[in-house]
Length: 44
Image 1 (cartoon, one colour):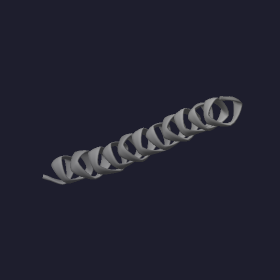
Image 2 (cartoon, one colour):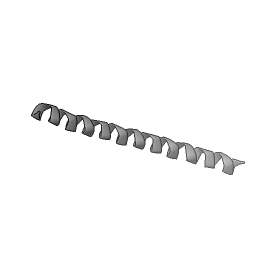
Image 3 (tube, one colour):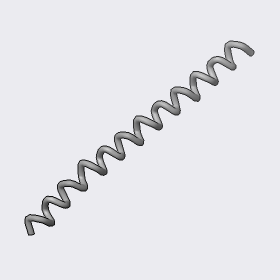
Image 4 (cartoon, helix red, strand yellow):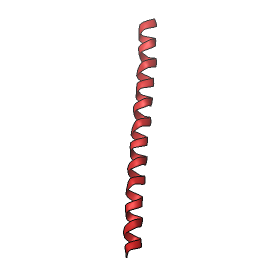
């Protein structure tokens, strides 16, 4: 039973890391898109 608990504890941080990494990537992509849109808006 202790093996099952440790497996569960190992899965949770990995899932949290994946979710936070996805969030960071989405934030960076949004910032890049807004930056490109801003450049086009200024140059137009």
